[in-house]
Image 1: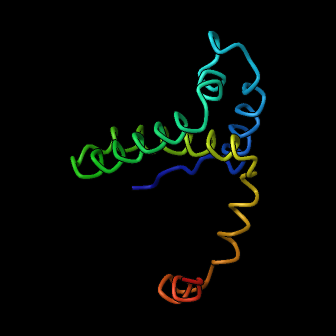
Image 2: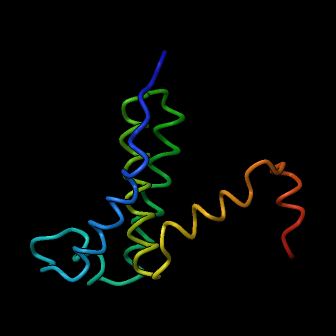
Length: 111
């Protein structure tokens, strides 16, 4: 089954939207509300979305998994913004790891 890929700029556009909404009124923006509540709340939401993604994967419901995976990516980008880590830096790390065995890459990390 062929699945169309999201446009490469989808995550970059989402990152820009999150950056623009960080300083908005928390009553009108979910992103602003998360930022106003602090890093603890942002990380809590990311953890919740990660667990929900795992549950959806195990339930066998493809549509639910897709939705939860989207929520997970969104909340990850919110966390990265809160920590001033650009998505490009994460993508550069993935590029650096490309072509390296996961086992070898993990073994190369310092303990």
